[in-house]
Every structure is written in C-alpha cells, then in structure tokens.
Amino acid sequence: MTPEVFILPTPVKNLDNMSKHLTKDELEARASAQAAALPCRKPKKPKLVTKDKAASRHWARILKDMKDLEIIDVLDTDALAIYCAKLSRRDRLQEEYLQLMAKEELDLNVIRSSVKLSEALQSAEREILAYASKLGLTPESRVRLAKRLADQEDADPDADLFA
Image (cartoon, rainbow, N blue to C red; front, side, top):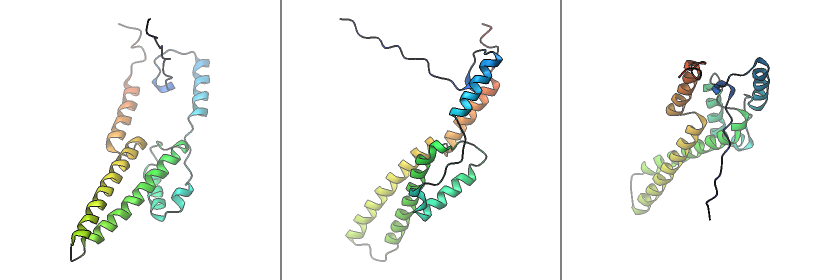
C-alpha cells in the first residue's frame, strides 16, 4: 500500500510581494480585488472595551499611537479588544499585588496570596506579549514588518530573468 501524497496549493501572494510579470490589465484587476479584500478601516470600540474604563483608555492610546502605521484594521477588532481587556486585568492585578505587599504584617496567608497574585501576573503578562506580537505592537514584530517592506522595495523586478 502506497502512502497518499498531498499536493498543497501555492500560497496566494500580496500584489506587492509578487515577482511575476503581469499585464497592465492584470495589475489593475489584481489591485482592485486586493483593495476590496484588504481594507484598512479604523476599528470600532466593541462592548468588551467600552464597559471597562481602563481597557477603553488602552484602546484609545494604542489607536492614537498607531494612527500612522496602518497595521490595525477592522478585522483586528476582537484581538485588540482582548488585548486591551488583558492590559486592564493586568493593571488591576498589579494594584492588588502592590496593596498586598504594602501591608505591615506579612503572615502566611498574605504570602500565599502574594504568590498566587504573582503567578497570575506572570501569566497575564505572557498572554499580553503574545497578543502584542500578533498585533504588531512589539519592537520585534515592527522590525519584522519593516524588514519585509524594505525587502519589497529593494527587490529587483528583473531578478527572475537573469541567472
């Protein structure tokens, strides 16, 4: 019995990443189809964020800081809302942890609570970093994006013609 062979389709490329030579009509058709499929519209604040004042502040700050980058789109609304809610939760956990550690007497119950809060904070921060990376909010993710854009600009359009 022979094993099955799966042939995967070639991944679709963004027009800016294509090295194939297209006619003017093909370019225009592809560009209009891509513009329709990849809009860049400002996301609207969902209920998850509007109900939480701290999350709402994070939402406004992030969109203000990223207004010139055009990375965040309407399709990213849910991920950005979850990210802002996680930031708000982390802020509350930090405040609770600081209040707990400010107590004069540190008995066994306080120490146990502080360990639990510390673990919850670490978990929240790991999740926040994962979301930030996916949303293009970390230095590494922005450098990766900048490198991709620079590679597109430096690419020789005739590179595939010569050996």
